[in-house]
Image 1 (tube, rainbow, N blue to C red):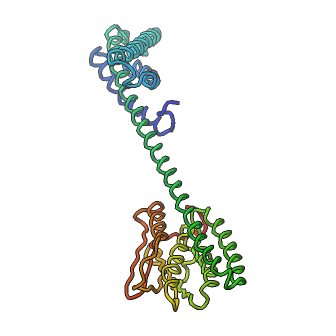
Image 2 (tube, one colour):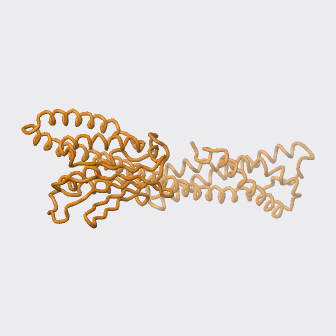
Length: 357
């Protein structure tokens, strides 16, 4: 279908343009042929309407002969071969219309539609059809640019989704590796603890798989998932692991990406509590600040302990996910000072609970 016929607004604008063209043609015919304006309007108005439809055919001519598909001279010949017949057809229609009007005395002056008028019609027809060709080439170029832009956006969305799936896929294996090591360490010394840890691990993995397939979940669900993880680790660390929570009222319904908090909590356990003989307390704080949600996970650290292999892998994963999801609207800030490590998530504020993005 012709792009100008895709909406009523485009059709209306097109015919408004031709009303202006018709007014210019009436003025030209009245000046050249010295006819009364009223008679010229009766003669020219229907012809302008007819040619407005004829000029739409330039779209298919241009689409069948794209720029660059043939040598310039050949392309010019093809386009001239469409402009001249169209103008000739219009001129013949003008001659027939003038003859019909003259057969009914009083409609137009007898000299309306004479050879001079028809010559003006022919020249105007060639010019108007040529301009229509130029306009349609511009329309086709604009549509091609929009199609390229659309394909580019689609490829960016596809790449973004693939990157998110890859980043999510790293979370559970990374956590599972650590948990299996913990279970292995407990099997000899605490078989009952190893059994309980295995059950809790299964419950955590089932929940994380269900939530991880969504685009966004309520913060309460993300906090509950973190609690399941901490329950797994509590079996291993016992009294050495304590947890404090300070959740601002009303923030639990805010939407967050799934599995965005668990790597921070895991990092606090693995690189904080686990490295201290006396263990420590992990503190989870949630605050609403203007149009942002801030989630902070703080833990004590042994500043004299050497950095472990693979340290901060989970934090880097979180950063990449935030860059992919929200770019400049989100971020992760980490601070380590005075024996405390703090990781603060900054997220756009969504009060949509479990609705998708």
